[in-house]
Length: 117
Image 1 (cartoon, rainbow, N blue to C red):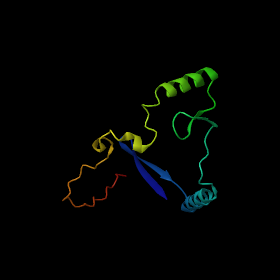
Image 2 (cartoon, one colour):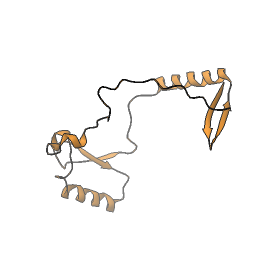
Image 3 (cartoon, helix red, strand yellow):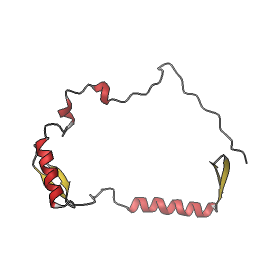
Image 4 (cartoon, rainbow, N blue to C red):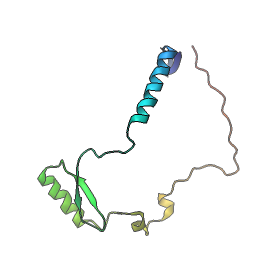
């Protein structure tokens, strides 16, 4: 198996045994199935009662920084959008993504590019 890729105006190549590549691929798929889907937080969160519902901040901050963050959040809790329903005054055209594609355009398959060897 050979992979070619552009590097600094030249063509770089990587040679590999196809059977080793398959083994690595199968091992990755097997590991992916065995790993849990649930994501765990990196650190414990301290819950705050700023607004209805729970808010959390990291527990690995120093006491001084934690106090500053809590004071800042309490002072500015009306600024943050805690849920999408809180953003009623924002125009949807600002937060909605649109692709700049002509509606009458048809998809075109591009020609395959060949790198020089």
